[in-house]
Amino acid sequence: MKNTQLTDSANDSGAGTLSNYHIKTLMLWSCELKPRSWWTDDFNLIRICVELLHTLADWLNDGRCPHYFISNCNLIQQFVNMYDTQVTANKLMSVTRQWLCEWYVDNYIQKCADERCPDSLLTSLWHPISSEPRGGLDSVVCLQKMVSAVVKIRQDLSPWRTSYNCQMFRNHIIADVSLHSLTLQTCLCWMHQLANADQVLSLFFTAMVSLHVAHKTMQGSLTDEMLDVLAALTYLQLNDVRRCVNARHSSLLSLNQAAVLMKVVANNSRSTVQLIQIELSKAYLHRALRCKDSDRYSIYCLANVYLAVLYYTTGQCDTAIDHCTLVTRSQDHSQCSSHVIQGELLPKIDDQVDSILGLAVFYQYIRAATLNEEQERRHVSVFTTELFAHYLYTKFLSATECQQLPQSSLAEQIRRYRSCVCNSREMFVTDVIAFILASRTRYTATDRELMTDRVKTKSLVIRQLDTSKLVELLQQSAVEYLTTCRELEAPICDSLFHVITTDFKALYAYKCGQYQRCLQLSVRNVRTLISRQMLGVLVYVCPELIQLMDDDIVSLIGLTVLANPPHNKSIFRCAISQLSLSLYLMTQCQIKLRHSVTSLDKTLDDVEFSRTNIVHGCEFDQLVLKFVTKKISR
Image 1 (cartoon, one colour):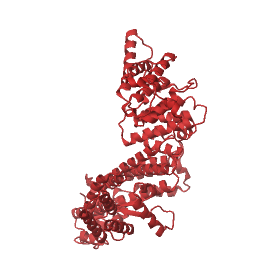
Image 2 (cartoon, rainbow, N blue to C red):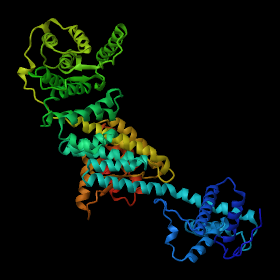
Image 3 (cartoon, rainbow, N blue to C red):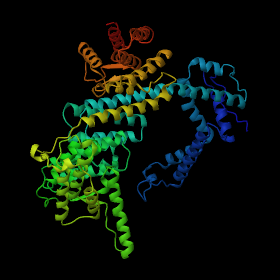
Image 4 (cartoon, rainbow, N blue to C red):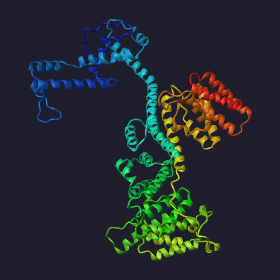
């Protein structure tokens, strides 16, 4: 290495201050050796910057400076004094890696060390080094120690910074979703911004929107706006705002939206998200039937058949039969322009329907091979709407889960089915196979006696959408997303405070009456937090999360707000730690399960220990633990 001398080599290098000489020596040495270490990228950047500055100097000397956006434009013409241009070019050409390294050190590394490292650390690192230079190797070692110390401090602060920033963004999400009127446009904006930002925040937003829609639905009904928000949230290809908004006033577009969702869930497993999509498909079909436009009659039968299939899939056999009856008892099908059921949209009904579709495809293949048909093959995975409604009606009546329902004679239904087939002007091969299978359905001798017709004893109308199942699924889905968020953030924050990952699971288990499951999770959480003497993270109480809690703690929150009303519209009025929440759930479950006094006394000891040694300045935590103490002592 060249022994490069610098004029300001040993100035101001006292203890606790980073020596410019040592840093600059290291930078120059590193530039010449180009080591493969932590500074390689920085020096590559310096090299590129120097080359670009020299290129600019050449352009100034040659009198050419092209515009980046405008062709045949020379920016050098804007200079009035060419002498100034030459001076600028000379200054740029004089820039070397040495000078740029010194500038980089003086303006960044020095400042970073002074701001990030405490004085004690700087003193311990630089005290052995005198004001006189001791050689390049000593400089390298010292600077490596200094940079390593800065990096370590940043790593130590990173979990705090990450946790703080994440909580701040969560608060923004909660405030925007809860306080402001959530629309399809704002939902899509959030989704777009969070998609490339952070997985935890994206999952948290999905959970909060799910809880928000569930909260609004329980207060009133599922509005068109909330329906479109859920559709965009669960299936991103539905995020065409104009199409979603237009579908609110069009029966045909609403039917198409339902078809898209049905196609998504047709071949998927029944996860919580898929079950939500089935409920959304029902909602879109009901909206299609509510529309008052000119297309409502053309899609009437089609929408009812799809609804019958969906209701049967979710175990609501009574409602499924009603929708089939609306089609089979319809007197006029001439207005039904949409008279084909798409087999690819049907969820799993049973093996018989799958066999029908498979036989139809096989029949088409055999026919084409036998007759040497080379023309375009016709799509055969379809059913005629009216005939398929008769088939479903027959199947539902013969199903075990529908036997307890008051029903028309199965024999009479098959007779009507046969009459419909004979009078049908057009049918598919699938209709023929379906009828053959349905006509072979066995029924007992008592079924031959015509019972009171369902239509005569009950006026069939289009029922309103029952949103209770959707609300339950949204809450369940939100808990799954929130649990995933906990699992993702636990490794990051574990060095600072232990994050319990099952607090929302325990909360939801208690809400569903699964007290033994809730007790197991809560006991484990309490033992973990008390052993580490940690509170866990805070759970901010907002209207969306209140629906997961029981009446006692909700009343406690309400009394707290009444006694201490906030000065603004902030929703962050109460926050409860994971430890206090787990102790509360643990106590409630023990009381519900009628545990012994000895077991409750042990829980009381945990409560008193937490109040004395862990929970200090948390007012609402103290209030919750006092309430738990009263519950146990009562």
